[in-house]
Image (cartoon, rainbow, N blue to C red; front, side, top):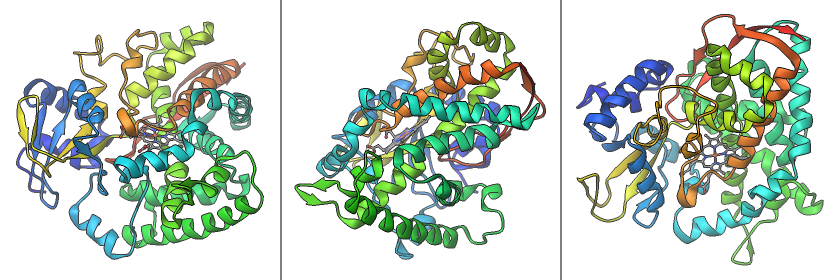
Length: 414
Ligand code: HEM
């Protein structure tokens, strides 16, 4: 691919993210030398890549100047146009701005508040126990990412959603059809990725239309009921926005969290002293979860579009130009984190992580994600007396949501 500056490849190339060490070396260089890097890559509208914490922070906060618009996820322009030409018009919270965004977010906001999420802790514990018990079934070795992290986080999100266990496989396929679109392993032999995406959206549509009908007729205390009966300005939510509301909640919640858990586990396995400390003192799990989410930053980036002429760190940005917020890079900025390249579950600055973004679009599910990770850690350590890597972890080739997708481990049961 033609590109004006080779360093910009780390944002554009899905493969670049599969080499974490190499990726972070380039990002560190950019933070030092070119924190607002103009990237002109063939097939992509140019963008400025922001790699420093302060700049990612400031742009996220200034939602009056920097809009998400309908195209906040980086991809080739042709894909974007093709998706639209195929009649797919994503309209999630991520794609909205201003009052429209505020009103739609309001529909589920209370449901995701800390006190409301805390009430689900017992359910999360029960699900964590169920999946930690699988270690016993696997008998001493497994792929922690695919065997534990993926199904566990999927089950939690589906249980809060209210989707029955029998439909989880379908939900997983659908999510991978949307988010996995760049990774060859997830695509398998489905053929053309965009055709696959269209089919995926059509299946989601069918599934959620039936769910809406059901929850309107038989409301329960689940999230599907809240979305099905959601109102905007006193009127039922428009069907299209409702479909995409279901899709964002069904998809944003588990790939992200499972990558944080699996990638965090890899970091722990590489530093057995920290694993041992956690086994002795389970109270460390809360900070460990923060550190795992800082370290892994499963959402790689979002874009924002300047609504007026402005500047970032002295670099002029004209109205209409776009900037890329690099969360993994901002999370390793030594202006904010002491010794940022060190994974440390006791670090006092772990809570300065920016993996969940900031401002009006701040991750709706951050409370769930944190609870899921910190609840699982002690459950695992209650069951195993020793656990180690049994081969090289494999990373997803994805430049939107990604992380460790295979984590072979061996362990001794207590
Ligand atoms: C470690 C796990 C997760 C990470 C790293 C993550 C990251 C993010 C990021 C970076 C954003 C955009 C923030 C911004 O633009 O400022 C976001 C938004 C969002 N996330 Fe998460 N997320 C995670 C888990 C979850 C979970 C568990 C759910 C649902 C249960 C969820 C639902 C959402 C939704 C609905 C939005 C859109 C919010 C809006 O635009 O107003 N996420 N997330």
